[in-house]
Length: 151
Image (cartoon, rainbow, N blue to C red; front, side):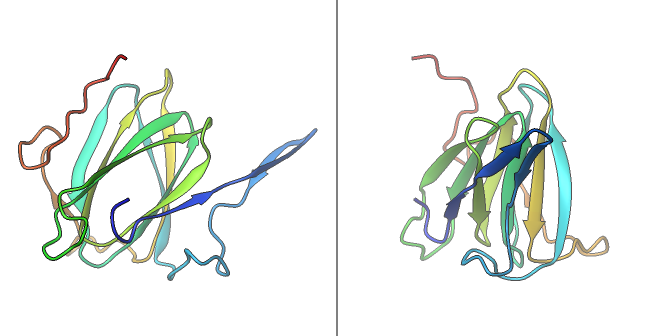
């Protein structure tokens, strides 16, 4: 596991009305601070990546569909520099993944319908000076192939 990455198993509580699932509470060990919460979506087969943040930590939960979240550690001096982590998350694996500062991340929609991702990040988005540093989804700078692997 990339140094600083945390994974929290989530539990949905169901009754005849529907489901409730807590994602991140202020008394969880994963909670750092609140910046903002936003929703993003990903269509089937689409790759959104790569980027990292210098100031914020992300807390990703896929609440609808399935997603392949991939992290790459390019941090100088990190004991896990060069490591890649894959997380298959969503309706069939309800987890929260906390992504540390300066770790590249991207994701791919792997379900047959649009995936919905909720991010509770530690900083609010600054429209005048965004804390986002990007690379193309398919780059030789990150040793990862987004292709589906059939075993």
